[in-house]
Amino acid sequence: MATSRSWRPSHVLDGPYPARLDEIEELNQVFSEAFTERYRRDGMVGVRVPFLNPAVWRYAIRDAADGAMVWRGERGEIVAFNVVHRSGVEGWMGPIAVRSEHQGVGAGKEIVRRGVDWLKVHGASIIGLETMPRTMDNIGFYSAIGFVPGRLTLTTTVDASYADKPGTLYGRLSSHDKDDVLAQCRDLVGSLIPGYDHSREIQLTDELALGETLLLMRRDQLLGFALCHTAPLVEGRAREDLRVLKLALFDLSSLDEMVRLLSDLARRSGTRRVSIRMQSEYEAAYQRLIALRGRVRWSDLRMTLGGYPEKRAERGLVLSNWEI
Image 1 (cartoon, rainbow, N blue to C red):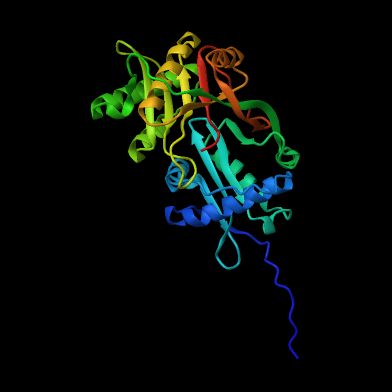
Image 2 (cartoon, rainbow, N blue to C red):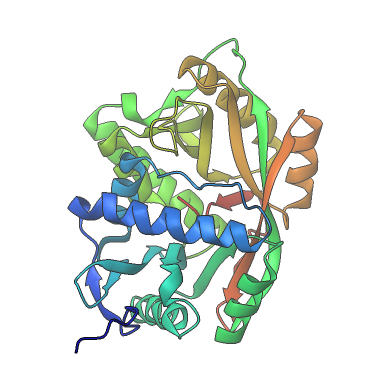
């Protein structure tokens, strides 16, 4: 006589495998389910995390290259992923997700450790991630792996408005000039924090038409740049924010002009505001941004692996977003 019994998923993970562009829909399903469950555990029962824009996924996967890793269940389905990025010596992980039925059995530790190993092998001297500061479970989880809490990233917005004259845009340069400016961007960031390099993200943003890199020039000298995305972060949504992913300034005195040109770019690109993720260790820059009518919209906690701390520019400003 046959008897029925409830089916339980195997918790053995198979992987990692390279994430593929044709798996974006499945990655979105894991992402949405895992983060919706995270919000439910935090008491926000009615929150449903939407799918990310496939264009943003394509950027994340291509930026990470073989650092974009997935793990599969016994039927070949994606049950976890870790998208690991490196910009010179700066390494960070995100997004990271594990299906809820595979949580609590060591799967999360496995995928984070694999990400850490990948970054170490590829020469990262900074290894970090961002998590929600109100979520004690997440902070405790990463702490148990060896990560330590640092400062906050404060998502601060400034309304879009026209300037007297628009700024110079990387995407509108000739191929020859792009090569020259890209080298200047690399040199500028490297002079502020040795080993940092955001040139790949600048090129990829231009190639995928996700946004622009605003250049702050004096004659032929680069004083700063801001890598921005205008593509909606959420699938099916209209453009709302001009999101600044990377920003470098040789001197903090140029911040007002950069914000003014970013506000202009936001207006001209059809978005309502500029969104700047300000790392709170840059206190003077944060205070100046608030004085420019910046409004804090969100906060994230930056955590770094013990022995692989984040570096701070001793002069000027370097902002580096650890989320896509």
